[in-house]
Image 1 (cartoon, rainbow, N blue to C red):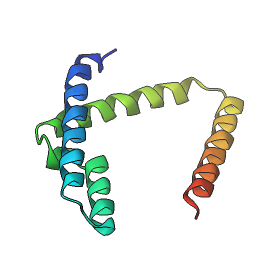
Image 2 (tube, rainbow, N blue to C red; image 1 turned 90 degrees about the vertical axis):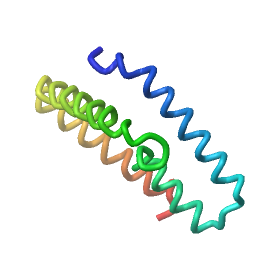
Image 3 (tube, rainbow, N blue to C red; image 1 turned 60 degrees about the vertical axis):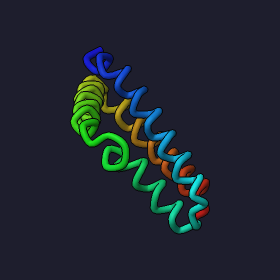
Length: 100
């Protein structure tokens, strides 16, 4: 609930990222340029579209980390072990999907 006040700002930033991607692709970039852009727009979009959004993003991640921590504290040992096994399974699936 604490992060819901940023929902309109998140949506606005998402639209900025979409516009930036379309403009970038309109320039007919090479494959290496696309890879570099995708990495940057996914991990550092504030550098491309909205420098002020970095603080919003960092706050959102801090809230999410606190929520995850609280959830982990509430789990029994058995539940934690089940979570670890599921996450390892997801990681293996992602590696398979990536073709690595």
